[in-house]
Image 1 (tube, rainbow, N blue to C red):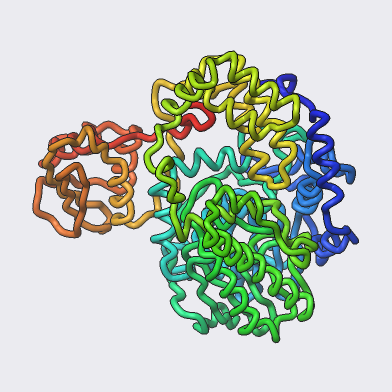
Image 2: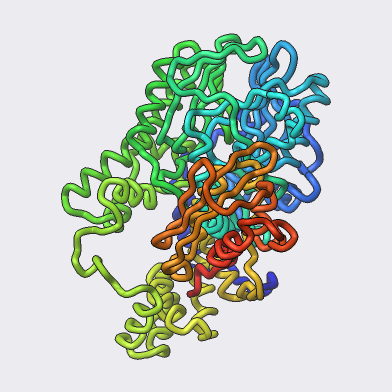
Length: 619
């Protein structure tokens, strides 16, 4: 797709954005002062070859929002463009704007404690180099992962070498970190990676008609990603560690913003780290890229607990995204409103559900109270009240709303065919969508036209009109992810991703450092139940390097594994097994002549290779 294929904002969109501008809180510039406070230095355009650059976002230097961008999102995008090394308080430093997340450096007695080494290695390495340039050439003495999302651990190889990790570098994380990181980023990794291309606008032009910001940060860096297991697990609130001479007091917050997460406090610096449990906007109770629904009630409770544990002492509060807060009273107000933001959505969703409203009905009517809506840091630049309310409903009541007509509906293609027939055929559907477009009712136009696209994905008129409708909805969205979903859908309708003769799989980088047992867990979701059929298979895998011996068993179209031997054996490395599964190696080169060669071959023949680029906006 070229930029010429895109449309300008329609009169209805311009009117909607002007109306939205009138609802924004007053802007006294305080957030910009906070975001720039303590600036030390940066690199031009935060340009990191092959991984990251803010150069394409130069258009955001204009204070006046483009007519194709929600004015609230434009402001957030400008804030997220502020980049470089910042002093939070003496001894605590952050590099912001080098990735979607923020990396924090704590000066210990001998080196730097690194908190959340970004998504990929190149930005993390550049951030560490900037820190060393301006604060001294010191080693990394420890790494802390605040939680189990990839943008907080994936760049570890940029701040620590494999040799340093092998030598015992402390890597500290909340209990359950590895299990949850594998569950979210590996077991469902292919589907989540594909959906993330929509959520973060990875394929969009970076301009006022394309990707401008994700709300949480500019976007996700594109460098080398790794999953290195922690060496120290924090299991209880109140646990204390002294790391490189610095005392840290931990608060575990499972099932909040992530299934495994923790806040912590540095008494020496009177500095509170709120991980990703507090950000400068409304976060996701459910993330549109796909993940487990988060517990909004617990999330709110942990924020209140942190306020009680550390709030009276803290003089500065920082987090894994956005900019810090300074001063005890300012921190307290921020924590109370963030706490009540999630509890309000939780409580009011269930109140309305108990009145009999279903998830879409609740999402349509729920609004924040004036005391919360008046703050910039509660606005829906990332999460929205709409889809977060649906998430709370889902957590308690599931996908089914109790209406028997919704219990077993036809799947999308069959539903589409029947709607098109009932509405009078393709031309009638197109006419209804054009009527909705003329009235500025883009939601209805996109909803009805989606049935025609799924019934007949080759209908060029339907695809083109659907793209136009989604595009206007993107322009009107205050949420960065909503905007990117709409605009990416429009782009793929206009220019479909070409088919490939072989699956283009998500990068296997996170598999490389998994413990052997976790790697075998990931194979079980690749087993094709139809192909496996009545296959009965036993195989022993002995990993080189002393990484374990496991017996694999396939029966009832399910793959099991257990430690120990007892079947025909193959000896291979973990990387060799990954390469075989991904199709990057030949079985004859890896296991030729070994007793378990035939069994391994049969197993590989019933393991799927996932295609990252499956259809979303089309069947």
